[in-house]
Each structure stands twice: as structure tokens, then as C-alpha cells.
Picture 1 (cartoon, helix red, strand yellow):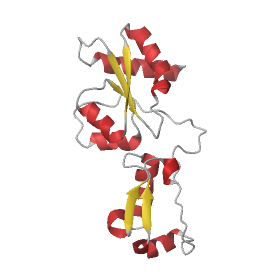
Picture 2 (cartoon, rainbow, N blue to C red):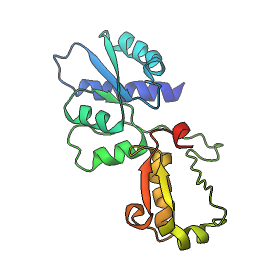
Picture 3 (cartoon, one colour):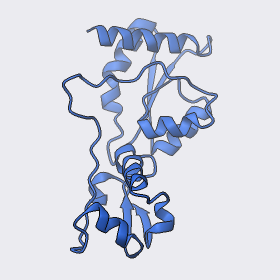
Picture 4 (tube, rainbow, N blue to C red):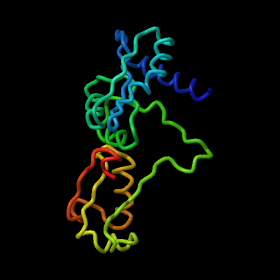
Length: 181
């Protein structure tokens, strides 16, 4: 319960720093695959409406890049964004500041999962991947994906593959986890 109170207080502080004459609070995220996540935002929107006595409009942008553009065009008051989206926004962010980050439970083993799959029987280890990288194609999930782009790029970088676009025969994006698989 404490977490929810802290979240709501921080969101209200963020809202109070918005334009004072705004009559509607704009709560936004981005669509993932076919899930616009509007339904996921409704419980929070309802609480915010009760606390602020103002209507809350929930918005789902088609992807992380569009979401970042919406934030920069001042179309969003409260943004629920993924890690990579925040990092991309923070490169030249003058539009929003972080009010909080979700805390991972202490008993949680981890938060992100990344899987590297191959149909090439010659690749049995990360060392094999490093040696044969020029003969392989790489499919990431989406440019704005943390687990399907940022994390695998960090792994590749740790193997000395700093720029996949320059090292793999071909690099592409599947759009979401299911279609990439």
C-alpha cells in the first residue's frame, strides 16, 4: 500500500508542475505488439481522477519512438515508459523529469529476459558467435525494446561486437517478441 501512496503522491507532484489551467490530465504509454495497454492504465486513471477531481485521458502511442515524440511535443503529463525509451528520451530531454521508477521485489531473481536463438548448428557458444558473426544475420525485436534490443546489444558489445550493423551480414527488427521468434 505504501508503494501506491508514494506513486500517487509523486504523480500528483508531477501533475501540479504541469500547466495550471489544464483541465485534463494526460496519462500515456506505448502500444506493445497488439496491446495498447489502455485497459492496464484504467485503475491508475480512476485513482488520479478521484484525487485530482479532473478527468484523465489515457493515451497509447503506436511505439516507443512516437511516444517520445509525444512527450517532446508536450502531449503527455504522466508517462509510463520502458528503460530504453527513457534512455533515448534523456539524450535531449527538456520535457519531463523522472518522478519514480518501479522497484523490483527483493525476492525477484531479475527483471529482463533476453534469449539469443540460432538455427545454425555451427553456433554452440558465444565464442562461436563472435568468430562467425560476419556470416550471420541478426534479428532484434524493436528499436525501442529494452529486452529485445538494448540488452542483446549490451551482450554483443561485451563480446567485442560493438556495432552489429557493421559486423553481421544483415540486421533487422521483427517488431515484437512473438514475430521475432
